[in-house]
Image (tube, rainbow, N blue to C red):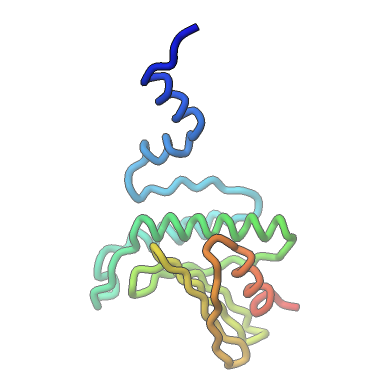
Length: 160
């Protein structure tokens, strides 16, 4: 029986955590999207489009979207759609935009209710704000719990 040397432990580490291997192999900022049922590919295309904007895209000094913000927004979208499927919540597709401070925005609206919801995703922050029938609101949301955002979508956006 072979003894476990340095090479064996490295192989075991990679075999036990293949995602770390993928992270090392891909260029910085690249995002691998693994789609699952119900996630529209257009949302990922839009995240890629706004992430490719160059510095000063708004002619007022706006920064580029960082690779970390792009990755975080992608992960959030995946977790939102997966949670919606798991909890049988209808998930309307968001419009994707970039804010002047380099955050990726997800925007939902419902004209019948006069409601909108905007979620901004940055490297270290996640913010939600919206309005319904002319009343503005902001919400505290947990980055690790997509149900916070789904609850806002269900309450303010999804038609009754």
